[in-house]
Length: 429
Image 1: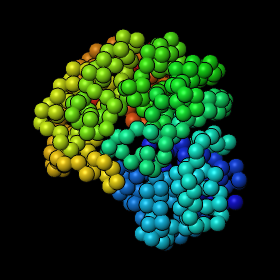
Image 2: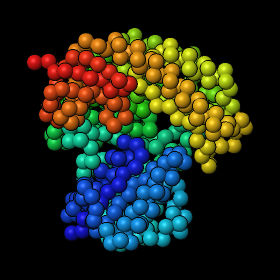
Image 3: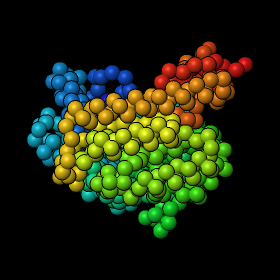
Image 4: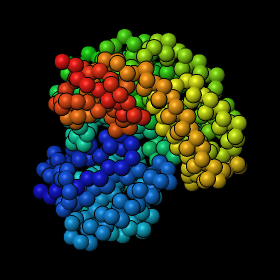
């Protein structure tokens, strides 16, 4: 059977889609090429969340087309969010593509490979577990998608248009998938969705993330369970209690806040407020005093004044987040925010990114000093590098360790230094 060369762009949720498509193909006998081309078929799963992601996807498609012309590939298939956004326009722009398939099309990937053409079926109304999955992450760590789509109305976001409404995966399917991952040697799972904290609301009429965490904690072989993409409004005492009581749930929470000024939050279409966010942060730290909180902020949003931005900087300095992603506002076609007055110049946005980055650097310097001499448990990703429960895979930095350790194993170590988001540790014998 032919060989497949995959390229997966964008977020971990997109990566799980790639893994499912590759799993379907592998089950049909296709060989997955994880190194360098050539291969019979190139499969690119695209992202289109913001303009920079669109540019990256187009650049990758053009690179694959150039390689196809040189004989490295027989055909190219494009999948994912850029296909969902552009549909047939993508084929008009890149006629060298042999097939395009939309979001949630793992079931169509075999037909796309074998028949070419357009596979733009409606988004599935029910999110089901795919039987096959080809791992594209480290063998000991995996993402587990518990829901897809979004019912929020954030003015800057294209996700509901690209991925549809919120759809939870049945709890039994999630447990089965987690058990299969653990049986294959996965020791850490990171729960992902556009909004993990809304898990279950569409299926059961109530939020069920706390219940899901309690069930996942019972799975033999899993050591760490990590919660990503939480919304502050839905971070409930029940969720925090489950995180605090279950030894396998990492004391880590990824909770994108986007801003702190009430005026900007309202313009963003967020349900949060400054009062709610600060109250929620205090509640989280009351339940789990040593928790690492990662968040994201958008700076330069339409109408953001110097005072709004100064308040955001003060907030970052005061609340000392463990990790922060800082993004300059991107004006996306088709979003409500694109039509807002008060669009800011690119230079202003860039300067504010730099200023907020500098503020967070001061926070990290203070936090790093407190880490010196502390003993930590590290999951080794490479012989000389790993992560504590305070660092998520791929995005949060980690710990440089000496001497060498076996990847996939846990090691006890003492923190002896730090530089930015990279800690340095020595093993404890």
